[in-house]
Image (cartoon, rainbow, N blue to C red; front, side, top):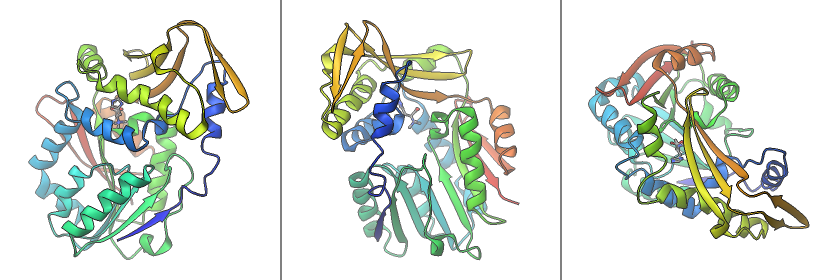
Length: 316
Ligand code: AVJ
């Protein structure tokens, strides 16, 4: 097991946060949700009754595992973007068909822990963890991208939904360009559905999603020495049917000034910080996006209620 840390070079990554917080419409990129505690809170979200994506994707994988593995084929390398707790990848690693696993995650401590455990549980598999922010430029070590080896990129959980449509196209095109002919992408995409189900999935009764969203401010207080008072902000999430996305915001519950370094940022009463978009796709919308980004559609799997979809795409 080895860990390659590409994030330490990106020492300006919080400059983006200050920039977007001082823009006319305040926002913060969802990657700032994932410090160590944020990753732990997200794992808790995946266990919630209201948050159907994770268990539905797992059930789809369980139901079609043999077929999925036939596409991935043997002695292959699997590169996973945003690896998190790796419950899904374990289903693939169990098959014994994968030689090398390359998890890529922005949370170093979370990645080291999960990579350590995986290399203990699967001693025959070479685990190379990469600490990186894949929404920014990504350069994977040459030896991992050897064209003679079959490679599959695994991008589960509908994290593709965090990208604006144009960015999603660019990101998929970047992956297609990284891969060689015959390689593939196994990607999970949340499907458009009744607004009430989507609303509930991001406004759980236990308030874990609210904690996850507010923890972003604790992350900035720690990393930037900011003085956000979490009691003066509130979680707010809703489904924007027109744009086909769930939006998460943090609402300023009074007029207040937050200091970050030498910057003072004024928040008007009820002004929001836009912290995440989670775009939802109909099956055909996503298939169009994938084929316009350099991929060939091989197979699409869904659950009986079409709550979630999993796609295997190949590169010509
Ligand atoms: C990890 C980005 C797929 O958008 O559903 C969960 C993150 N945000 N609850 C999603 C999330 C609020 C999740 N993704």
